[in-house]
Image (cartoon, rainbow, N blue to C red):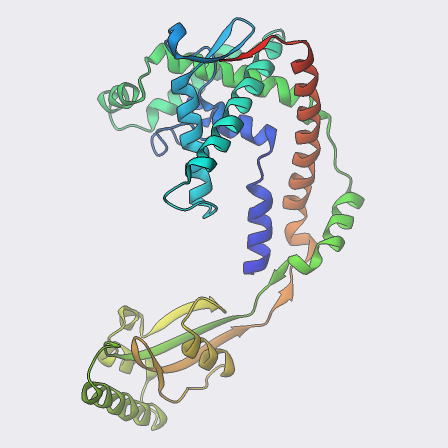
Length: 350
């Protein structure tokens, strides 16, 4: 299932303009505002929400200013997202930071362009949406004082946060009404995409196993290792003589899994150290291995259950594939829309 999950996750993590707009302002809109004290993407801080001075301005979109602080927060979040997905190291090279800054500034400009266009559309329940999202934001904090502290740390007033929420609501409503709601993905498109990518939608084999570990440090003396191995071999004889594996694991194993009778749950190839993995995948359900040595010590492994690898059925992934295909089309449409806006807009990078 790892390949399947990786593929579906990679699709979900694409920088799609619609989802970017929705998640980018999740910070402003109260989604994960407590858990994620900085905006999710570049558009989370938008061009007219924070206190500004001319010296802080890095770009202008018409008369709207984008500040250095907004850009820095956008870059910070862009890098943090990439690091969370293990696409960047902890120490980011300066060249990558420069690229992120350029991309983040373009995202902020694009968001501002769409927002300015979106303001022309009437939204009957706009203030109701804003009130609801603000209430969600506040509800994530145990007390009003915690909420106030959060705002202070972010350099925001409640009014500025409310303005961010309003801008988010205006922009997303506009995109949903004018672009997203008009995109329909036919069943044939989903099936065609599935067939073309079937090889990547594979559930990998899994094994559920228990083990008894007689732990010994890799740097231990030869004598200590010999004693540990002898203890493991003695326990193996008890297992073969019919003693309950789980009970022996509880009383003799040095692994934390001993509390569960040695049960490690299901795991896939690549999740355990090679000698352990090779022994476990070679066994049939109910079989017990010989003593297996790893850097952790000496193991006795019992396989409880095995799941064979298979291609994920279309029925199980069609909704995610349909969402992915729709996001692709929406993303393309938004890109074309923004390109058109840029042709007539007055944009100045300072």
